[in-house]
Length: 484
Image (cartoon, rainbow, N blue to C red; front, side):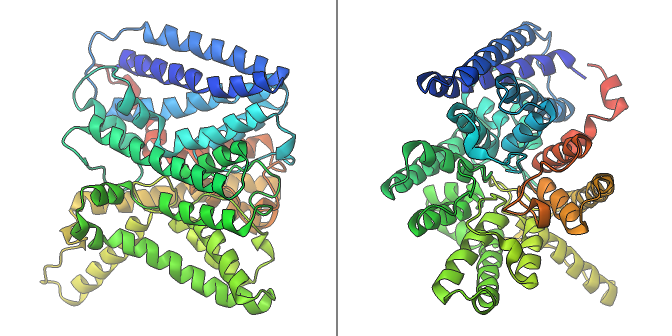
């Protein structure tokens, strides 16, 4: 294990985080939010100092393997969450550091789960930082490092970092150079964010709210700046957010293919059609279910259904209504969408649509093999054969997901919350959604959990965002004993 290169890269990540806090500091300063401003000053100084010290540990070799990639990724996300929590704690806005850590992990992992009972009481500088963590975490801080900063070269340096942080069963290159791919991803990400901000401003939303809402939408995070999330905004603004939540749940490779006009590849993409099919089908079913029972007219039922399905499936977590009061079928369908999640290669969380499709295709393959033992049946996705490595990876991921779910569910159950609360809280954190059902529904929060449960749920958010293996490998003694 090349510990020096890990420390070196971790130092660069912390220096980036310190730089990203500067806009929040300026907002606090100009709005005379003195406590928040001083909290950012001290946090920036401390984060910069630690970052500089770590970057001074020059590695003798920049040889970089998959193990280092996983470790750097996991430690980076833990470190930015620990330092990113300091402004909330130092300012006194959130007195308990565990709550600060939970809120910041939720931000960076784009979960949107909150312990706050009065969001609007936070200083605006802290509200901006809280929402901006979504935007940073959506595409990934290491992807940004690859796109913007040149910190060294090594054996598979860029690929190992990208593989460890990118969601989905397989990481491919859009261009021959991964650094160029990372730049393209961020340019698409920035362009969509700016477009949403423009449309929100056109609908009368304030500049501050537009930026924070766009950050939450782009990262599919869902931290709102209002206590009622999106309920108080106009139908136009809610519709803009509905559309952009769905857009950010699409695999970003699709946008690249559209840019290079590879329309055949777009049309043949099974995950895209699966994602759209599940989303549209769920909207229709919930609309039919809630229109008569909730006494909505059909237009309002469609509007509310589309917003909540888009929010839950893309794991954004914004809300316009308390869907806890919806019929059981609609609530159950939303719970299923929590697990499925968005597309691989998007900013959304969950198991991912592509994995769900592959699991069903593998099941079909096994059924065919049982009926026709000598038959040769290849599993295909978008007309390409899914090799055994990808199939095995999907199965291992599913095993990890449900193992962590069961373990976490049993541990948080000691808080004596309802079964519905515990199940959906864990699923929501693992899938990086935010709101669940019952106590942690859209009208509730996570403040009633104990500090121990909050730390467990924080770990679940990190497990879910990094797709388990980087976090699991941190606890492997053999990994740390290995030296380069």
